[in-house]
Length: 325
Image (cartoon, rainbow, N blue to C red; front, side, top):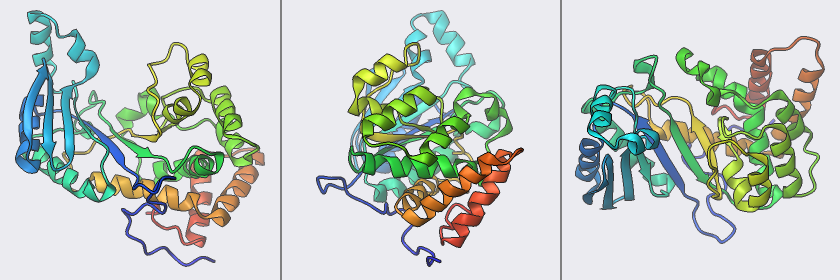
């Protein structure tokens, strides 16, 4: 049995990419309760920099301690606000139309500073997703990959797929959010495929993913990475979906933004991602999870809650307790 990890929960197990540069994470936070202008000025107050209004409902805070930070109204609403009447309707809907904070790629050790911005926003009236049934706000982490080979990407995808039910069990999604399509878990067919890991090349993995679950509406959206590696394959498979931007980063999509809850933090959510990467680098626990998943799937009647309990027992046995209650 492995000994429990004692590393800093914010430290990635592989902190650098193939070039030896430190890996970065871009963060997107959706919230309400503050105007984009007021929020931009709060950021400048905490991190320095200059606030510039680039367009209606769109601000950029330049030269902050965290690099450039964008603050804007949700894209769909911002683009539709082209007349006085649109503006009136927008003002009436302010509490359900999200304002977004989008950071430049950050070093993980800068996330504490971002949490101070969140605390200031909370103190000034920011609202998160659990404050109302119609508040469809989330937080996205765009985590730079270590490399583009199958060996760089598959273990992390396997670890997430095999532990997704644990994440959902230990930190349940708000009931109102479960009705939204983008919080659906990976299909069992995709988890089956990933557990078997019958891939020889990264192209095999991309083809299997696109054949089984070609959607962005998942907690871990792999399409940006796959488009970065093979644009043609992704473009051919995802017609009719929202545009996919190619980038070498895991798109980890958290279904809730709890910015108005004092015990919530971006750092804590980041620590859960780091735990996934640590599981990915432990060949023994990953193999045990995959083996147990195969047994789980051969049972006549099984539920996702059954798998969550099984996976938690395995994680505990191998010393990976970061995701456990």
